[in-house]
Image 1 (cartoon, rainbow, N blue to C red):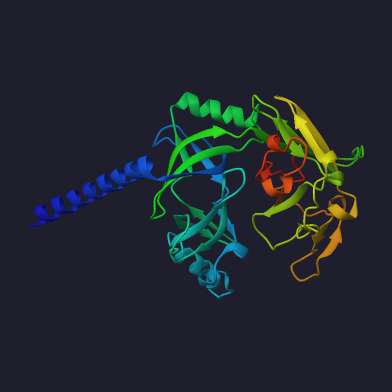
Image 2: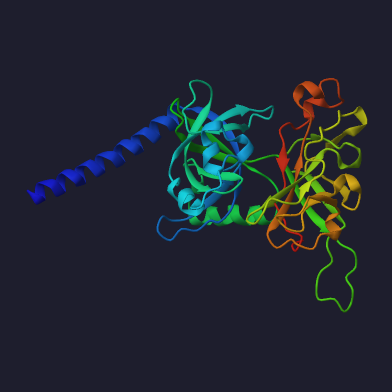
Length: 347
């Protein structure tokens, strides 16, 4: 009797694996193709072979993009950590839209399956005070070890700041499977600008500015929109733990319209640099000295607590409709673009 039960369980497990593999293969060949921007992270796995782990735009969902049926997940509780741990592996659904560049953008996350529209099904990986991390089964690229190493080296050197465009097949049930990948044509990086350090000081001075760089990595001309004063850029804070703090004062300020003089054509391999003065009030952040204090506009150069906060810049181009009538409109690269993140201790 025990032997029969053992074989029944074994056969059921094998059947389940075959079904899952067959389902993913079916999605791969019949699913709708969408593009998801991703960043390679860490290509190693001794158990499963060489692969490139990916962080992509759909992974971390801010509280503001979570639907009402997830509101209770963020509520303060006496057993908050135990409760959040109980939410791991819960099924959630990410509703998507396609932007002007053809890339998928998150609209909202819900515990209920959408009745219509484009969506992907995922499982909760982590719930924090202000975001939910979700995995969708598209968080890794498996490939031959040498190719994985080349991808990692490209990410750190010649392709720094260039998103990886994942071609993802999506089924009507929201199952997502990676179909292929390629590098995006435009890259964005930045470095901090610091004042000279004092000779006797052991601490590095805080940045007073940033130098943001666009590079055309494609084989054809591309155009960007460089609004005066760096207004094509947004400063984004990414705190990994601790209280929410140091958001840019212009976070909710609309991006101004572009003028013909703002359009810059980049030839293949060409770089455009934009200097951002972080001491100017329009680039200050709302800083709290502690969780009970009031947020006060402060220059980054005056803020001394950066042990658990990182920043990145985001480029916000005009939409296709907004670009109509601008010179070289057909060359303008649409869709937002984000730089790699840096702490103020990192150059």
